Length: 196
Image (spheres, rainbow, N blue to C red):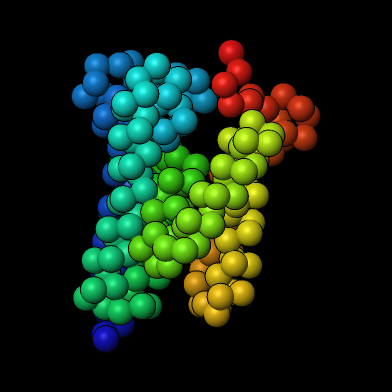
């Protein structure tokens, strides 16, 4: 495995991760520019604010699968290290896409997507914790933060220290992108799921 391919794996991940499905699908669907709606974010949660549930679901799936495909493609040609670098690239590509002046999404769907590709039981755990937290608190952002916090611990517990280290980095980036949500949670002003 040449070190040159590790760079290629990262770039494959970044380019796939930087595809702004939310922006592309809403534009094709004839809605106004997604960045002028709600939070201005390009992810599925903001697409849902357009009232187009189908587009929101398609965005969620697209943002997940771009991470999964990046990991699978790089892993097939370059092994485990290439897969992890592709995962990092895909996540960074979603958060900081070059096409959108590095103003991307918050990364939750892509986080799940790379987990599916690297160790699917952790992705299942993430979703179960998200659902349990969302059901009890009705905060989407808090659910993602709690699930992401647990993910590296889960990976370490199940004997994947390298993946755990990678997801410490991804979790810190996810928390960074949720800075405003965290401030609103602390102030009690964060919107709840289903609230008008």
